[in-house]
Length: 239
Length: 47
Image 1 (cartoon, rainbow over the protein chains, first blue to last red):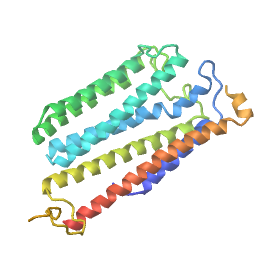
Image 2 (cartoon, rainbow over the protein chains, first blue to last red):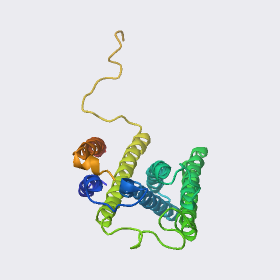
Image 3 (tube, rainbow over the protein chains, first blue to last red):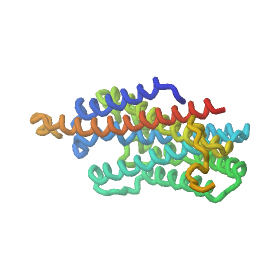
C-alpha cells in the first residue's frame, strides 16, 4: 500500500483525462453537445464505485473465512470510498440529466438502480453503527456487505439493460458497444476509468492505513515516543 | 458546440482552472500519504 508507482500512474492518467477530455475532438451530437465530455468524468465514478465495492466484498468474504479484524477494516474503508464515488456519480449524473434530458431525476432505471444501491450501502454503515462488539459487528457487516454487492448486480447491470431509456446501454443493448461509444472517445475514456479507479484505491488505502495506525495505538495504549523525555508532571511547580 | 470558446482561446482558461484544482487535490493526497508513511515508520521504530 506504500508503493508509489500506481499512484503516479493515477496522477498521469487523471491529468491526461482532463487535458484530452477538454481539448480533443468529440462527436458533434444534438442536445448533448460538449457535455458528452462528461463521459470521462461521470461514468468512471460508477466504474470506480463498482470496483471499490467489489474490493470491499472481497475483503468481507476474506473476513468470514478468517476472522482477522484487519479484513473488516479493509472492507469498511473500501465501502466508504465506494459510497463517496457513488454519491459523486449520482450528483454529476443529475446535473448532466437536467441539461441533457430536461429533469434532474428522470426516473430512469439506471438512476433508480444507482440510488437503491447507495441506499443499500448506507444501510451497511448504519448497521455497523448499531453494533458495538468488534467481532459481531465485523461478521454481520461482512455478511450484509456481500449481500449488498450481489443485490447491486441486477440493479445496475441487468434491469437497466432490459428497459428502454435515454441512458446508453438500454433497451436490450449493452452500453459501450460500437454504436454507443465513438472510436474517438475510447482512447480517453478507458484511461480515464483506470485513473479514477486508481485514485479511489489510493484514497481507500490511505484511510485503511490511518485506521490501522489508530487500531495499533488503541491496542498498545502508549503514546508515540518522540525521543524527547519530558516528565509528565514537569508543569507542576510545587511537588 | 463550444467553437467560439475554442477560437478565442478561452478554453485554455477552463483547462487551466481544472488542472490547478486537480494539482492541488492530488498534491494534498501526496502530502497525506507521506505523513501516514512517517507515522507508520514511527510505530515500526517503537515496536
